[in-house]
Structures are given as structure tokens and as C-alpha cells.
Amino acid sequence: MRVLKFAQNLFLHVAPNNTAFCATLEGVLAAMGFQLEHQRRRRPSRSSSSSRSCTPVRGQKRAREPTPEPVEVPFPEPPPRTRPSEHLRKCCPGCFGDLKYNPAEVADLMVCLDACFTEKKNKSHRDPPKFHPHSRFVPESVARKTEEYVESVRQQKKKTKRPKKNNGVVVDVEEDEDCYEHGLPLPCSVLDGCEASFKAADEKREKASTDFFEDTALMALLCRHDRVLFVVNMHSAGEKQFNVVALMETLFQHLPLNIRVGLLYDIACSFERSCRKWGFLSRFLERLAFAVSVFHAFGHEWACQLLYHPRKRIGFGFTNGEGCERFWHSISHLIAHLRICAYHNRLYTLDSQMEHAAEASLTLKGLHYVHGWKMLEMR
Image 1 (spheres, rainbow, N blue to C red):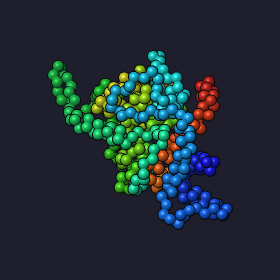
Image 2: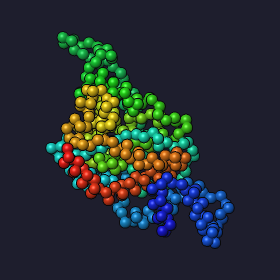
Image 3: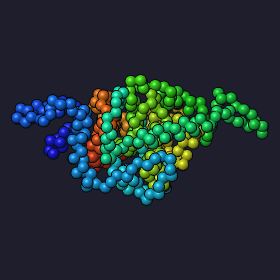
Image 4: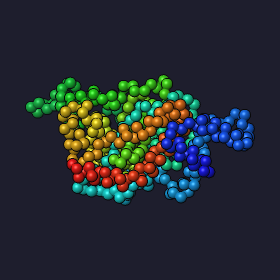
């Protein structure tokens, strides 16, 4: 059991190399006079050996913890809650341990999301199913259902010309004429300029080839303390908006009905435009405040920066929305391993890394608050 615990902790700090570990273990045991039985026979793939070896360790830990609440589908009405779900409270006690509605604030909770197209996986046969006890991944069935919903809504609403009144007479407005639409604070020309400046806003632009990769990217939703709440495993060549909808719908399923959320996203202006145009997240729009992640704001139109920059939006404080970038950097050592490992082993490895990062950062949360307070005093 001690060797298994050592292997488990080792693969949380380095990229898993199961073949090298197993070969080393066999060599050490052989030198000590211990010969493994049936060593010459064909054995199951070693790619999942370390994950299976950690099962007894996780079984002991899981026996001492309450059963995690299942992730709910995005479409039903959220269940009434008096506090955030057990899953959210476990992810970040600082954000969700004592989360309450505060009418004096613009948002009671700050979250950020982003996609990373370096965490790809080559096409291969799927390994046997294997699930982490505290998985943060949105189920594939929920993501697929959300994609079908988003596509069906866009197909139902046909493109129509915007009406305009001229001396009481309704006339047609050409598509290239600038105006405000759907109650948005920015004109169409500004929003079009922002969408043209960012690859993420162009859903048709390919960032990863689906001919070579089965899983093309990850999209994660993090709280302001850089702790992962939910993740979507992406299979599309571009950054599709249904992934954002799936993450936000899942988040609201775990929150009380009166909690308001501040969302920081690279293309928050474009996403809010889609929500108001197509009716995405219509049940929650009154509880949503949008802002652009601070390091991506410079690429937006100047008018957009005046309204969506987190430093200029009331209620966002010093939250910068770049927690996703820090998370992608923390798991960058896994890129080579995740590129060739099997499907379920890839998800299990990522869940293990996220759980390890959450436990490690919990011990440093006091220092985080002290540093934040000192920075606040300096400013």
C-alpha cells in the first residue's frame, strides 16, 4: 500500500509514465529475487495500471467522505437550494462555503472560463470505462444535448431584417446599417469588430484538426481562487458556444436560485450578444454580469473596453479572469502524455490533477488572503 501511495503522489507531480514505472518496479523486484508470475504472457495495457493501483487508496478515502452529488442536466429548472451543492463547496470552500445573496453587490460570485487547444488526444480505440469519484467533467451526454439544443434554436430563428420606424412608417433596415439590437449597450459595428479580432468568436475557424485528434481541447470554468469547478471535453475543431452554455447551465444547477454570477470570458461581449439574440441562458440572464478577461481586453474595440473591462465594471474589483491561463500552465507538463493516452485514462488523469491542485491550494489559502489584503492596501 505504501508503494501504491508513492506512485499515486509521484504521478501527481510529474507526467505519468506507466511503462517506465512498471519496468523499473519489475527490474527491482527481479534483482531482489522476486519473479512476477506470468510475466511473459500478454498483459492488459499499462496505460491504466497506475490508475487501477490507486483504486484501493481512493476507496479508503472515499469511505470517509459523503457521496458526491451527481451533475444534473442543464435543461430542467434548478432545484431549490439554501446553499451551494456539496460539489461546489468541496471545490472551493472560500467561494461557496458561506455564499449568500448580497443585494448591495452586482454579483455574489465571480467565475471565469476559457478553452485550451494544446490538451489534445490522438484518435485511438477507447479503453474500458473508468470514472473518478469526484469528476469535474460535464458528461458527454449533457454536452451533446446542449449542442443539439443550441443548433436547433439557431435553425428555428430565421434571419430577418430589422424593422425601423420612419415618421411612424415601418421600413426595412439593411443588414449593413449600424444600430443597437436586443437591448445590448454596444452597437452592432463594435460587436462585429470584436468578433473579427478574436479567433474564439469565430466558431467556423479550425484550431485543431478532427482528422487526427479525437479530443481537440478542454474548456474549464474556474472560480476567482483559480479552482476548477467544471470542465467540458471538446471534440470540435473550433470553440463552439454550446460548451459555454453547458458549463453555465451546469453551474446554475448547483447554486441557490437567488445567487448572481459575474462571468469573465475572452469574448464576453460576443457571448452576451448570442444569449440575448438566441435566448441562451434566458432563465439566468438577470442574474448574470459579463466582463472581458483583463489580458484579452486590449484586443476589443475601445467602446467595448469602456463597458466590459473588469476594472471599469462596477462590482468586479480586482478579479482579472485569467485563472484559466494559470490552470493551463499548471498542467502543461501533461501535454505529451495526454496526447497518446486512452480516452478514459485521460479524463481520470486530469481529474486526479485537478483534485490534487485543489487540495494543495487549500493549505495556501491563508497566504492568498494575506497577499490579497496587502495588495489592496497598496492600491
